[in-house]
Amino acid sequence: MKEEEVNRCQIQNWYPKFRSITIRTKFHQLPESFISYLTDDSGPFLLPESVTNEDAMPNRVHNFEEEDDFQVSEGSDNEAETPLNPPSFPQLEIEIMESIETLGGTVLPKLNWSAPKDAAWISPSQNLSCTCFNEIALLFRSSDSLVHDLFNAYDSCSDKVSSRPESFYLALRKWYPSLKPEMEFRCFVKSNELVGISQREVTTFYPILLSEKDLLKGLIEEFFDDKIRLEFESENYTFDVYVTKERRVKLIDFNTWCGSTLPLMFTWEELEKIHYGECDDELELRIVESRRSVLPGLKTAVPYDYLDVSSGSGWDEVFKKAEEELRNESFG
Image 1 (cartoon, rainbow, N blue to C red):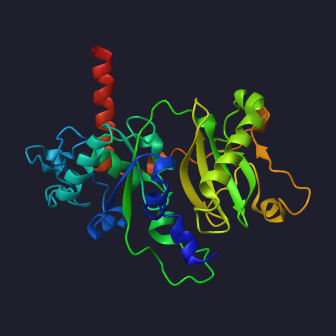
Image 2 (image 1 turned 90 degrees about the vertical axis):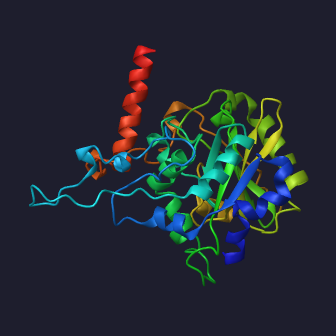
Image 3 (image 1 turned 180 degrees about the vertical axis):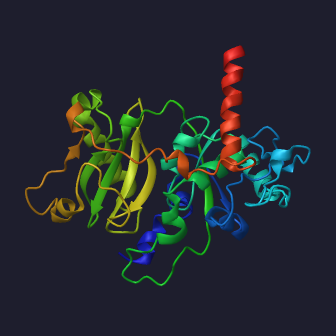
């Protein structure tokens, strides 16, 4: 795999050509100060100080009337350290909030290649939907998946000369709460031929896929021939699609062949052996065909001992926000 193949799969690179068949998306080039915030593990986890919404998971560290906003050094009972100062990205936050409003008030965020799917458990919504800048920062700071984009995007390249892309982009994608996970599929393209299709959500058995398997395979194959095959410049790659209730196919994302891309219901070894169009291999759509066939998913939790829950930390504010929402529901 070459660096140019990896770069083609960055969403800000492929989106302009395929905007008419994919989800509406707004882009923001991220300043290096924000990238440093995402990668800095030297101090406590703090959410950025909000300039547009004071109720959006605020850090309490700027309220100096509360004793808990000061940390006491180990071995000292009376010496208080300097209060924690939360990071602030006012211009970026304003621009992001404008985009969120344009996209209907709720978005799904991702970096150049990856979305923080492994961090959905920490979101107040328990999914990737975000309505404000701090919810995006919370997901990004909590995600291990984004380490790929930040440090390891070119690790599988035979001509690797870069350790990271020239720029990082935040892609804000319009959020559709009614999307059904069983209707998302990963498609594998080898030598410009569609050689395999896999159910994307492999941790669940969906009976409807059994009855519609042939129909879905035909729709996706036609979509590839009409919309993707002659437009995407790589010869070997994967792409994800969603099939709507009207049975229209929408492009979700492009990913590299092999590398960090999950083969899901296939293995890379068997995909490499397929020579569809040259022999008797037939295009196969693989689905979870029974509850016994489900596959394990991403890690969705972390040990409590790993969390920095000291007063004023980002996790402290997350838990307080959750408790507040629970109280409101109880007395509402």
